[in-house]
Image 1 (spheres, rainbow, N blue to C red):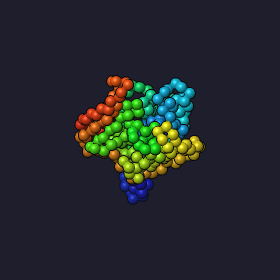
Image 2: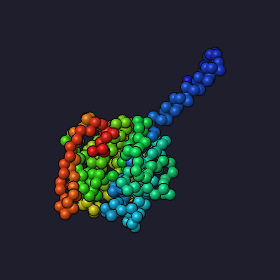
Image 3: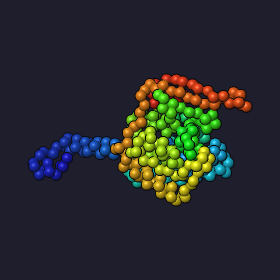
Image 4: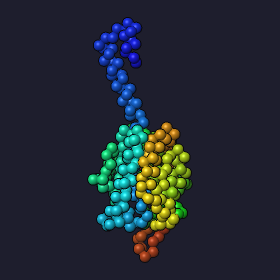
Length: 288
């Protein structure tokens, strides 16, 4: 709407018309700003640069565990910077690792951070106003060959999950929750096996960044942090451009689910157990 052109044409600009024009312009600008800018980041620890032992992730107050959390904050900072420089106007980060990984005084400016347990639900704060999901520091599903720290939910009970017959890990579980709100995964970071799993479930449009190569469950070829942080930053910027091409991950609900796990009722002889259930929608996928 060009007001100067209306003046030249002799159109009468009444105060009411001017007020309506300004309000309309503000509304359109706000709508445009909110359409493609809010990003939800959910984090884990096993797929972070330099992390390759369960001693780094299962504990909280040991030298290895504290160091791993510093590594985590460095990876996270690179991604937050990349998202913001790529055009994100709001970045909400959820500390998704079970015993938490956030170090508040090392938080990168330009994002909001949720940490602490217990919480009312998993991906708290996620809704349809977000246009992209980032899965930072993730790992491949339980049983994946040559994958660093592979597991699904619990590495100790070695859980495995199938949804409508398709074995799935934590990447698919988180993306299914986001899919309930129509939010697509746009970036996945972790080892090379995690990146392959992401492409298999989410397609090639979802950007992946490998920060190490898996050799065995607790062995990896590590890359210098200076290189991985550059790759994470570039990947985050690229993910912002990929948003129009990424699709939400959706299952056919209700889902027939199967869970396999080790029971330790007899600690000297763990027993393999199987449970089955029907899950009504994505919001309840982690209830089983």
